[in-house]
Length: 178
Image (cartoon, rainbow, N blue to C red; front, side, top):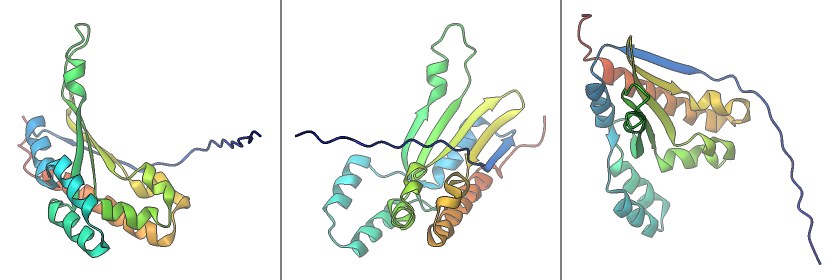
């Protein structure tokens, strides 16, 4: 006896809120300043540790202990610039995608809005251009938008605010124009 599989496919456009900051700060300094706001646990040990915790309060405490000042943990840093500079036909430049989040924050959104899981953890993009270092962030609240419950929306806006404050703090040390 075979079971038929049913598939539905929908496509729609979402109005995205993108924040872009341009700074004359050195790329490495901006990247380091963003990293200062993130927690940097030894990831394999951290995952093993939180995986062994059975009670929610203990889990939340362990995550909070590892989160940085912005309440976020660095999950991955993708150095796209190191790939670009390998291409002999390309002009190399710095470009890094930071993927950061907080499992407790993610849970508080996805328990009522599973679609928020597509955007949590969040992405912060840093890249060099002729006019300076660009840092871009697309807000989670706008990406998930109308699908969010009120409770998830409140958490998403707090997360977005924390990320934007992290970026602003990272750029405060900008040098005067050349």
